[in-house]
Length: 325
Image (cartoon, rainbow, N blue to C red):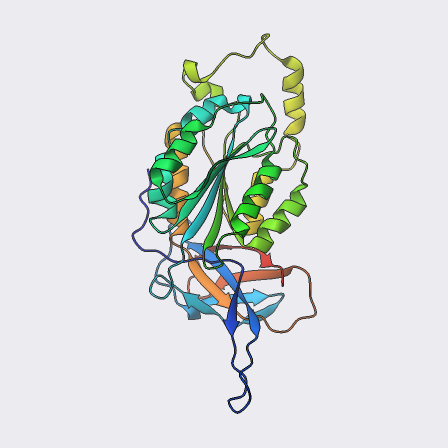
């Protein structure tokens, strides 16, 4: 299992207000300037985190225009993590739920830390809150243990992301907003459309880390008691339906790419533990870049590109852009 790093770099929400004082001889005027925050994960080509970079090592391009960049690290800022964990609780997920229920105790020490908070939701044919935001590791672990498989196949992943983003949008602006998904990679029956859910996450400054599994491979790695038999024997029509569903959009990939997160997969308990540990390590190893954008006629989505000029071998992952307020 990965061991998280001792140092922390903070990552905030998409926008934060800064204050500008205008004219010393005139009455003080305060105006909100949209400060765009860009959390960046920097690794070498082998996936090892690159430490010790400074502001001058980065170039941030906003809609083709290079920006003047500020870099915050653990020496200057410490932002608490607000985390929602969304767990698929479909009956088809029963073998994986048996594993997921064992890892609730990892969330507080590895991801949120002592100053952060986590909430737990479960989803199948509906989305329900299992535990509201708390910093109590015992409550988080107990919430994981209370999740039980319900409706056999429904798994409204996109609706669950929408609900989680709305919860995170209520958190303080100086908190880092993170969503950890433990589910299949594709949606099963959501009302909300994927593009709309992606935009909501981007506007709220939520970074999404999906940890996904295959419901068809899971029974081969589960204990017999965690793998209940399907009633009525093999469901050949259902199998054909599942093959058709595999052609749908990979929602987990889309959420990770659109928010600067990372999509990991797991099959065994050990690989699930590694995915959670790797996510926590990344969250606490990122650089927080920020810039004040120049005036622009573009009122829609602004595309961002981040480069590290001093390390030709650097691989940078960051959110692909932002929506101006």
